[in-house]
Length: 165
Image 1 (cartoon, helix red, strand yellow):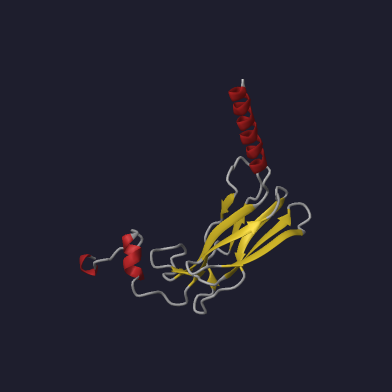
Image 2 (cartoon, one colour):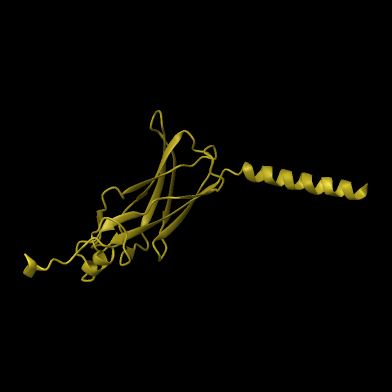
């Protein structure tokens, strides 16, 4: 009888422990910022991480557009960031953006990579508290000398033999 009481107590503690996790409303948003050194409009093996770039998460109400949350962080040496966000934002549109570039000769936003939308609610079937934002990028003013080789490796650039024309 004592063993069954102990087992019931352990099961109850485990169940209530899981309930506590289910009501945790903190989210962690992770992402990265890079400099597109080949102006390829996407990350390549020679893209440069943007260390020390300040980033911002902004959540706005879907109906009236008022800002409900703003959190800022700075990228580490690998160009990555982690931001902790409190509470549910089911009725909000939340987006990551770069406040400013940290590389002076890489300051033009990659088209479509200036913002990354992030869903911050537990009511969407995602169990994890961690949300991953799409990479945010800037274009270098001048491409690296190795870029043609990199684009060839990706099958995006071919050499034309003019003698065959």
